Image (cartoon, rainbow, N blue to C red; front, top):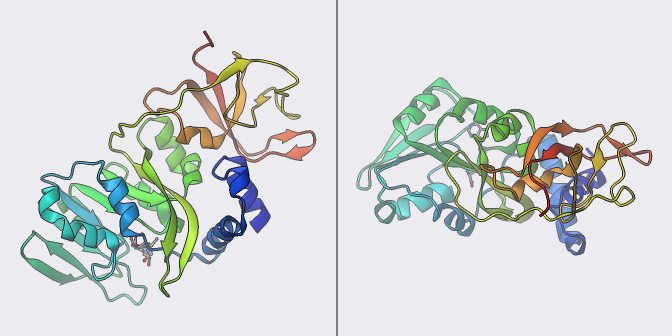
Length: 300
Ligand SMILES: C[S@@+](CC[C@H](N)C(=O)[O-])C[C@H]1O[C@@H](n2cnc3c(N)ncnc32)[C@H](O)[C@@H]1O
């Protein structure tokens, strides 16, 4: 994927506002793009982002497993270790990946810290890491973006809080789980990570969880359906809606920017989701992914 395409996708989907498309943000799209291409997973999470999100959950009496986290430098591990008593944790487990193959897992009970050798390379989807997950109540981490769907496949039945790029919600297993109400965005977003060399990079990310999220969501702004303002796609009998700010009040199928899902209550969806389309055209031009829906309610 080229840089302009990545930026266009982010922009079309409302993750960037017109006036924020500056060099810094362009850089972010670029970084994300290059990282995905090179399978570069070394984007480390800032403590402030972790604190802002995790203060919304109850960890009391729980064993937490950070499955992509070296206890020596992961801020996830450090957050749970430092706040072990105030969060009321029962235990903290970590393991990390080493491509060379020699790595370890750790356990901490608030007093004692123990380090154990792993047989494999610490791939969090491996059988021995799944055994560690079985010892825990919840998985909390920022996993490699390139493996997110695969890690989700292994762990979506276990409580989790994880970080990834926002558009993953509209793809593969993640989208299937979203439609079933089994995964949702968390409370906050992240936009900067640090790198092994200490440099920082702007990358737009979101939290994903299968735990309940109690936050307020926007109401859809329905406006009278005007065929000129809301044309249909060239290749499908679906109304094109460019911005989630104005949605036509109609019983017909509409194609919304996929970023709408960050703003609507997943437990009380205002529309029925019919699918995602990647192949729609408008005035001869390819249109980026759209969520195809039918509204459930009418304008009063
Ligand atoms: C996005 S980074 C985040 C690291 C840390 N969780 C944090 O938030 O700072 C993802 C980490 O997962 C590691 N990793 C790569 N493949 C992995 C795998 N199969 N299982 C577990 N961790 C893996 C990468 O080396 C990288 O350090």
